[in-house]
Length: 410
Length: 230
Image (cartoon, rainbow over all chains, first blue to last red; front, top):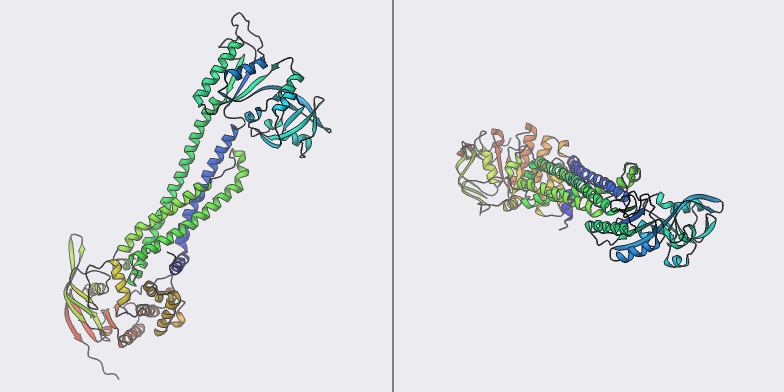
């Protein structure tokens, strides 16, 4: 297969016919470049969108309470609904199969935190260890809260990355003690949260510790849970509807009372998000295919033109003893060589351009624009094949016309 | 070397067809120096194209080197051309992006000869036509006469049996015409069959035998009377 002589002939032809080499090369490189950029930017939009909804687990459900707005079964309206520890137990027992992670939550706003003269105010949340997957928080250093902390009502906290930055100025906070409202807590971990800055300014403490400190008896503020990811969206909505119904029953709330107990289900949002993502994917795919088709048409035109232009040369070569196969082989190898090389160049330029401009596009809701390697490589291969086929047809025709006809071509 | 019997050729022209060669008979022996004369439209180029396997005849028999030529596919024709025939065209037909040496070496590439060897042989033939110092010039840097000498070197390089020249001096002035004819004579003296097409009497007179063609038939076929060398 590898014939040095043949390649030398090809290199010579390509280098002595710069215009058409450049023309074919630029077409392919440009098509791949455009493909990479458009696809990358499309993916960037997708990433932004994903991130907007990545703050919390996609399958999370939050239960909050307020005051009743309707009288029900002899109870008057305006009554405050209070969640308690027995509600935790009730929900967990009733929906054992449907629930994946579960945590009650007590929130204290504007808690003064002090570390060696540095101070700031943060929201402190008393939660179960399960709250970490609920918030999609990722541990950066140390660990999150544990059940042992919960049992011992330990004075330990996990702090958001920005809390560490504010109070510790970039030094490691794990193992240090912070004073919250005058009581000292030991930092056991620092976390990142994809939900953004606000979510990275939370301080998490064991639920039992916070409940003992701030709440009379067994009161709590809200519940957060994630449902079993095996449930599909319809099943998830049915689950939350049932959950709402039984909780309203338990607390004596009118089923039509929207304010007294709210179950916020991300599943419905997720459904819209999924649909939107699908549309976005279709648009990206459409852009990609469109660019590829434009590239294929471009390279086909150029190949037809190149072969046309070389008809006389082909005639001369045939008169000198070139067989049709050697003519076809020559044109094919030239076209494959140029398109593959140019395609690779376009791919590299595209990928590096995306890398270079990626950061500056964040303001335009384009996050981390990038293309999977296999997609660009696949696109390049498609263009190479298209160029080959587009070259083959006229090459075959040129190789089969009588040499005298080819020689007389002007 | 070349034997033609009752050769016919016509070209389709729309609905009708143009009957160009109407039953030609021609024998050319090895080592002959023959010219075909005729006005344009007489069919002389068609004859040369058929002899040169650049075109196919319709009926009749054509033997090249005692081999009957019929139903040749392009591959076989290409191999035969490469092996037995060398072409010199009126318009030179050099490849414009290859220098003189590469143009001369090209038939050897298709013969499958390695690069070094073919360049050495090509240079040898360029020297024979007196253009060794022009080896690295591109065709557009050469004069018409030089181009045609390069083309002659290219025709010779595979050491073919027959050189076919289609109006080799048609685009040249008289001095260069003479130089090219001298080259062809010299080639003929070395034993190669040379077959020239021309419409110029004085060019034909340089050959050993003149075949006159008119309207697709041979009207005369005679040896030239050599002028006395003064």
